[in-house]
Length: 234
Ligand SMILES: Nc1ncnc2c1ncn2[C@@H]1O[C@H](COP(=O)(O)OP(=O)(O)OP(=O)(O)O)[C@@H](O)[C@H]1O
Image (tube, rainbow, N blue to C red):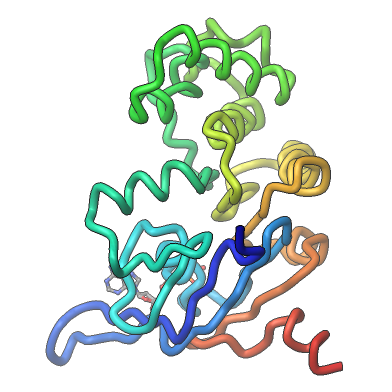
């Protein structure tokens, strides 16, 4: 198996048509190895979310090539792309995207339901993921009846339930107060350190970015610095 989980060569993305055309990302080459902890940083509008969406197969690049665990994604149709995304990636977004009026356990096991996993196995794996996040006692609670920090931990449990190689986190602490954010931050970093899950974090939070092993800085849709490349150069 390749050590590269993500291999993007010259990827770019342009939005809109005619005079409204706007290049949000241009000629970005980035390789991410298994187990890395990478922060994507840059000012608002620099292209961080666009890059994350392309790397996470949530959107398609207009230019360049993208391989995920050695699979050339250009060759995949929509269904195969979704399968690869669901199998390989877990997502933690600033907005929790939890289903209201539904139990914590059902929220956590939703990716497994989509993947067609049997109910008994879903429940077992969902409970194990919740236990890891110290939320076992909340399995039956309504997902809306939780604090912000608990909700984000449920989101992390949902990201973990499919045993992903990579977790993408887009401003994971953006909606949380400092103390709660610190717990969520520590949880994500621990999953990287202890379980070897590759962590890719889009963040404005300089402290969080500094705690990652590698920082990729974007400006106007281009990479202006990548600490991994600078290490190689040094
Ligand atoms: N769907 C879209 N249609 C048109 N322009 C878009 C679209 N999505 C993003 N853009 C533009 O592309 C540029 C990059 O956006 P992106 O969301 O990737 O930046 P960002 O660095 O994540 O910003 P922020 O930190 O504010 O979330 C911005 O100028 C934005 O206005």
